[in-house]
Amino acid sequence: MMKHRFSIIAFILLIKLLSPIAFAAEESSGKWSTEKAWQWYKDLPWLVGCNFIPSNAINQLEMWQADTFDPATIDRELSWAHDIGMNFVRVYLHDLLWQQDSKGFIERIDKYLEIADKHQIKTMFVFFDSCWDPYPKLGKQHEPTPHVHNSGWVQSPSIDILKDLSRHDELKDYIVGILTHYKDDSRILLWDLYNEPSNTNGASYSKLEPKNKDELSLALLQKVFQWARQVNPSQPLTTCAWRWNWQKGKATAPTIKFILENSDIMTFHSYLPPEKVQTQALHLLEYGRPVICSEYMARNRNLTFLTMLPFFKEHGIGACNWGFVSGKTQTIYPWDSWEKKYTKEPDPWFHDLLREDGTYYRSEEINLLIKMRREIESEKVAQPEKVNE
Image (cartoon, rainbow, N blue to C red):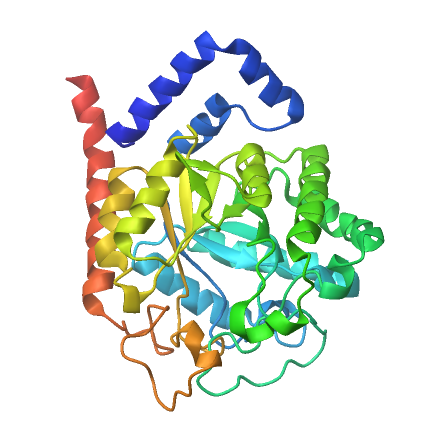
């Protein structure tokens, strides 16, 4: 793949020869060895994609519930993702869907994976989420609040379950059931166990959040990793680093420290200006494992395809921006739309890439991605000739 990535692989293999005890300890805990992580990663193309939800769904429940699951929209929008050069998407699940009808939920996941695979797109599934409405409810979801970013997104699990440690085990069947069913499914890229654990949601829902959410989220996260390791899927496990408490390149916050010590590959989120995101990414590379930025894009901070994709490609870092087709999540609006009144489309959009008819919001962004993907394909075609020489 990229020269930078191969240099890292060689470095890791050298460390393994010098430190066999440390690598044996990793493998005995169930965590992938660094060698296994790089073997998995080197066989992949450069990963570039988006966080995906169909434009006609306000949240995870509306995407997946039987009454509103829409294969036609998913098919159309994932075909657009393929056409502009994307090869994976990050998609959220929800524990209430498993509790409601596990069999039907699996059938709909199967249908989704069939569509994604048709478009040569792999999926990074997310099990839990600490962001937005802490009281999810099955059934018909409310309409979007006009001009408000993610006005209907819901947490998983509900805050009532999260804050009651005795109820955490109620979630085990959801994790084990889905992982067991798909543990050897090559259409799944990897498993993201918990999105931004301990996020208290700023101005939106902070008054509803428990003061000890950090400790509660960590307690659940530790169990989730344990349950997932028991299944031992063929795909890697990860959780995103999203808080940046760094001292000499190492995380100090307990939850982030646990994440980085237990993830098979490193994933992270950042919405800071480009130079700071680049510094964060380079810090994560110091852990000696593959890195994917699984959320970014904030145009009002100049965090865009133009400022980040060349850097990610150069360093072999996967790139997954937030949002694809503008729709009911309304993530074209920035976070401050919870406090500041918007009456029309913002300039620039905060997230998202396409309008609902498939036209590009900014052609220069999409054209850059298409160009980079074509260059990569050309490199792959030319590689055998170089080897034969």
